[in-house]
Image (cartoon, rainbow, N blue to C red; front, side):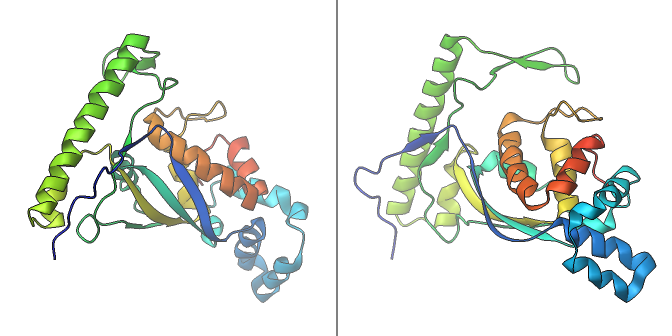
Length: 246
């Protein structure tokens, strides 16, 4: 059976990303029992029942002196919807991460595409390594939106035409652009997330400046909001010590 193009399928244009925390086993106490096994052995299990606020200083010490392994004994799984080009950057983060993304081989991809909002800095100035992004003009934003939307419509129409002709999804998807939205599950621990945030977000407290693409930074900011609620002491120590992963 071949796919047939639905009549009057509406193409959606979005300037946002979404991040949902679907599962977690992450708390500040996870850092404490993992760290204290070094000196307390089986007695470190007592940390499971203690208020982690009493050990705020230990968490800060571990972060400051970069004793990183105690921050790995936890897990967070996020469901992320973002443009494909964001996920291609995500895949550079391999240590401590697991990914499963929707497949254009096995399902018909939906017509949801990224168009930058008017608050997205649009113009790059300067040479490589020393460039900055500045606000675009209204005309530039109008051009970007019109050009991207026209291109997306043409690409998706071609995709549907190929599917209707019986061409396999895995072949037809080749005409679709990286501005197409995809979705994936991403699972990580606090240490791997801190490394991600150190590279993929800009922050006034960062000891090492980073210059991420805005769209992946948007994802990072939303992931950080979830993590900060789960592990507030660890998050505070991360900020206090320059947002450098231990």
